[in-house]
Image 1 (tube, rainbow, N blue to C red):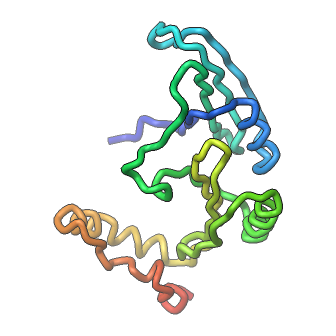
Image 2 (image 1 turned 120 degrees about the vertical axis):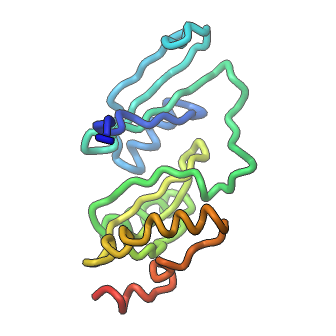
Image 3 (image 1 turned 30 degrees about the vertical axis):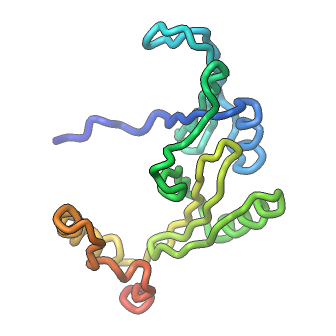
Length: 183
């Protein structure tokens, strides 16, 4: 099938405070506020539900959006899903940017995990003021890595579907063997 999706138009999350969220993303990630929309009813359903909808520039045409919903119960999260699972990963241009951002975030009192070496990329992880987990990633893959993973992707998925145990086809990614395998 020919892909019908041209690109992701925007990704939307809920926020506790739209103004705080916009300021936080501008200050810590350099993402500019590009649009604010407020309505007293939901355009798609007509349901009365006032909201503020903000759109942040995530670079290269990517947009991260948030909804503040003041009449709804306070935000929660899926308690059956570990906090590390649901996250938004954004790419940075270099390891220097990744490491400098880690230092800057930590100097602002934001707890940062990493960098974590995923063989293909290195990442840092932290939470925004709404409790959303964010990842900043810098590509570090070596020649041959993506091709090696492409060869085993369906075999891994089929094995997983049968066993629900981690297939070992690409264990080299996190056990460090990639450093010798891909020069």
